[in-house]
Length: 456
Ligand code: HEM
Image 1 (tube, rainbow, N blue to C red):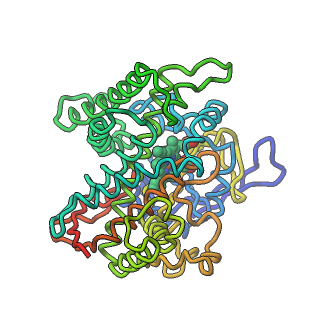
Image 2: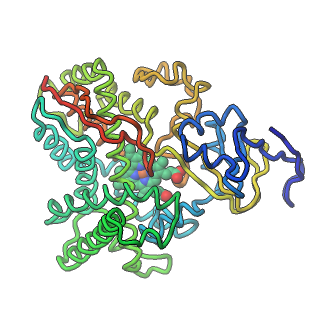
Image 3: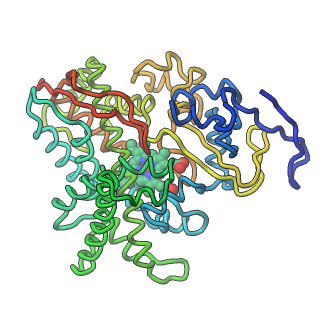
């Protein structure tokens, strides 16, 4: 491991160091093979090599940030933006004009437009849909019959996001199509982002055909929803109305493409991350039945036996801690990236202009330097008297700064309600056919989780 000193660019007076090269690279491929073979373990070990380290991915140098404090500094510094090859592949699939890939003034304007739909005071309006969907999920399950957690989690996540944010008369049927399209698109998207084989993905192979059909259906569905709303002349109080009435910086209505891309950019991360988290929660409830029992007790104490409602969520503190702890150990978003627009300093190291920087919420949230018994599922670590000792930025599954997830309150409310309804009604048993290994894709979730709910 070498640490070289370099002169900073025009701005700096002190000499900044170049970050150390992480160990374990091999000739030609550098660290790429480790990142492909076992990315989670690789990211978790990087802090041993430094607070900021260089990685070689073939001929390219990428910088990895490994401490909570510096991930905060990275996310809060406007000199680091969303850009790079991964984002370009994403734009090619989902559209170029959505909030998730925009930067600068366009991003600020788009965030201002969508933010009201996600504010805390907007949440009660989503209560009836969230409650209906969550209770429909628990009603549908028959005690003792095995459930496919992937399909069930997708269904509740996508239906809630679509019905709350894009209210529509025909949303029921469309929500089912959206679920199918999004699940297929997300299965194939990660491969297309990390292995950009371009024209090879156009070959008429069954997997490519399925992916392309699902992607086309996703875009078609969004067009249908927008067209139907325009034709109806109705303006319900939802995100779609806000987008249709949004103005650009000149005061002109925003273009059709931007409306389309915005809907895609909001629905896709919303559906995928929430469903991945519900799968992880179900896994944790099966692994740790004692916490399921505690959730049930808490729900009973708060509701007195009536169906749990969104208005109860703020009183379900243990349930909330179960959700947070599941997200700590199995964050849906396991890796985040930025690009430096100019030469910058991070933790006393020089980061050159144009550098790509990565960090892993998975590694940060499992770091033994931040957490006692770091691998243990311990929801009580989030009790106020204990959580004060957890370092700042050591638990930010929704990110930090201007790119922080707008859906954080929405998601926490839905996830707490879902956990309360599920554990209130069932215990979950593991089944032998289940494949619980983590699937590493755009998000992190169990490969094919099958569980047996048993009525309490
Ligand atoms: C961005 C996590 C749910 C919409 C993000 C980011 C993270 C994240 C880590 C990126 C932060 C960064 O780059 O620094 C999650 C998790 C969720 C969740 C863990 C649920 C468990 C949702 C929901 C929606 C949503 C429900 C909408 C319905 C978005 C959008 C962005 C985003 C639009 C891009 C924001 C921007 O770039 O300004 N999310 N998210 N997310 N999320 Fe979420």
